[in-house]
Amino acid sequence: QVQLVESGGGLVQAGGSLRLSCAASGRIFSIRRMGWYRQAPGKPAELVAAVTSGGSTNYADSVKGRFTASRDNAQNTVYLQMNSLKPDDTAVYYCNIRDEYEYEYWGQGTQVTVSS
Image 1 (cartoon, rainbow, N blue to C red):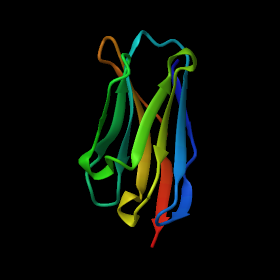
Image 2: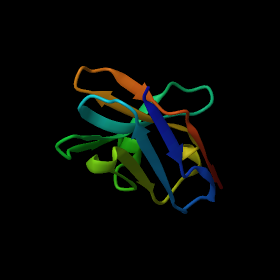
Image 3: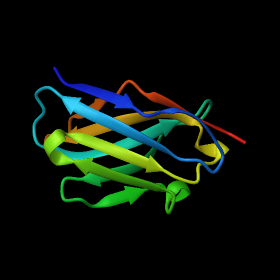
C-alpha cells in the first residue's frame, strides 16, 4: 500500500515563507512525476508545481518566481518552497505522484493559510 505523508503547512503572514514536504512509502512503480495541487474554498483544484523524473519543472503562472518544487528521488520525497506568500495562496495543498503507468497517488492535504 502506498502512503504519501505531507508536512509543513500552517499559518503565515503575507510575504512570509513555508516549505511543504511529501514523502512517499510503499510499493510504487517508477515515479514519473511528483507535484503539488491546491484547492481553495469554492474554487477548483489547480496544479501548482510539478517535477518530472528528469528534473524538469512546471509551475502555475500565479506562483512562478515565488515557489520552487524539488525532489529527492532516493527518498521518494517532493518539496515545495513557497516564498513571498500572498493571501490568494491560501488553500489546502495536496501532494500528487504519478507513476510510469499514469496511476496517481494523493496525499491527505495540508492547510496553508496566509494572513494579510
